[in-house]
Length: 359
Image 1: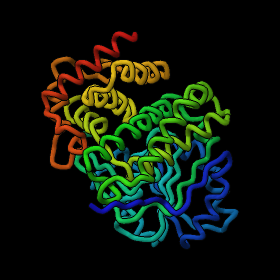
Image 2: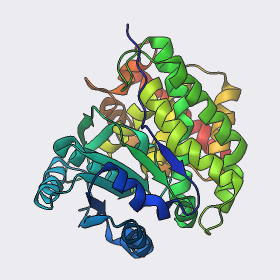
Image 3: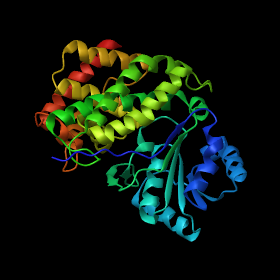
Image 4: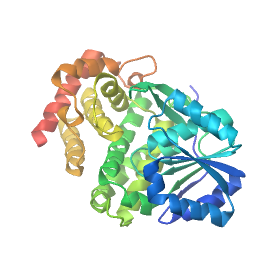
């Protein structure tokens, strides 16, 4: 089976990186569509305008409607065409960035992703997760191209609410284990074919960085202080995890996330649901009890959910979560051993029992 490796051509991270946005957009085109929301405009709108003005960059701002749906991508694509823009800049959280990818997929031209929270590994990838209007996953769009530039201003990230940062750690914690599962099963990656050694190595490095730096980074997050631990952890969440999941593969952890979305109404974030999915995956794989407990304790101490109740799953909905984790395109099919829904049910309950024992 073939293997492939994909990545953005450039990644830029550091405090004040937003000052360079206009210059980099100029390198890609003549007029930008800035896709963002009111909250982001209030926080960094003046900085963006100053950067664009200094570089002489023309741009038009289009406000994101709140959900990455096919209709929202179509609506904003029409804005891009009517404004004759040739660069899309997605600035905000993962859903804004996924919409921006979808727009560029329709219009061509350049794409810059500017995460203002380190909550997921979406900024580097060529995947848009598409939802229905009521918040359920409708599918995914896999784009031929990755963003031309991922620009991460860590001063902005450090000032965002801590919960989003912790959520990003939860998403990234699973990357190593999902890549290992996909490699073992011979499964498929978003890059095409089987996992590459480079992808798996990046996924493993992501986990090592998180274990070393995430506790101190979480302590610093939310107050605007950019520390070395925060810098290291942001790179792990955004770059290492992004390249690791696309080139290493997803498995049961993200499948369980999808099952939770399909079966429940929950306010849990993406990374919080993935974290419980990770513990479920480790149980499915029959990892040693001490390994599962060690990962669960690490997650718990950071403030991540480790029980069904933590992510809003009632006992009566566990079977529905397990059923929702299966489907033709589900990453559960990258899991070694061909697990069944009943095996996932048992693993969910076992993970929940372990999590409750930590509280």
